[in-house]
Image (tube, rainbow, N blue to C red; front, top):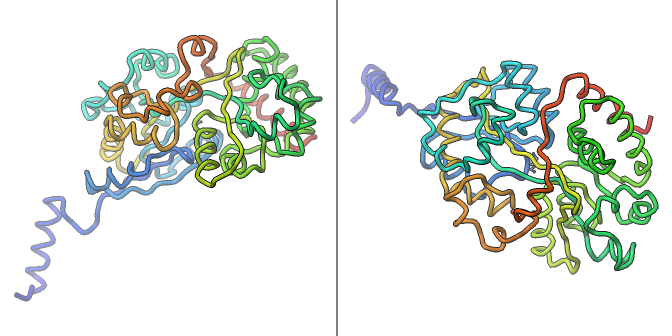
Length: 364
Ligand code: N2P
């Protein structure tokens, strides 16, 4: 049968109202790089019929700059909790409709309580994954440069200029995120890692300046491959990223061993939060995405691919045993005690951090 124009219009009007138009709904997600499972996006598209447009970033500052400009066009973004607190206070997110998120019940109540310090009442954010900051090491190269007795479980490995100088030729990578690196440096100096005292940041800057000549790159994503390929032997990095580097090195048949170390004295940790921008074009789909991520099999699929621990309790039994028992990824209780949560900081401190950070990187 051939459709007359009138019949065609009628058919398309009917399809439209049944939600079956050719124009499929879209969801724009902006997430960290190397932070998603193999099947996460395809599974969501299959389950919902919604098409996902997926972009990535590797720094909270990049995300924040985009969000504060407004109209970025994203439905879901994933800031770290310390950044999210300020952004929510600035009014750039919409409150979650929890009726649409029944899978919230899967989240670890202890973690929910903890992130409530940045997001009172868990009003705007849903934990996606959490992480520690630590040292990624090419054990063979580091031992060859420093000998077998090198203090591999200490921040001294990074902050002793004589030692770091010996690692320069095999490559030293530093996260390009001021907030994390200042917290680590303040901790090393026995100061409050979340200090609000400008003088502490000046002291941290002086300490960082001493090791600056031996840092061969500031990088928060490409360092995964650099470590895996043997172009870097020490990386200040995020836990899951080092896990990815280790797997990539093994898959490529490299003969060296990559390790992730949380220094004994302690290290930062934080939680990345799914949020919905106030001007999200499709908040209904955003809620569907968040609820999808909260499905145990989906959450475990992310951890199994990118080595970041999921705060999803029923997902844990679906996490590969080698990952679930990896003390670098899931730190045992004694190590958890040594970790400190990155806290939101006042604007003047952030400005100071950024100014010193640029100075450090450019060497001026
Ligand atoms: C993923 C990095 C996520 C941890 N590559 C930092 N928020």
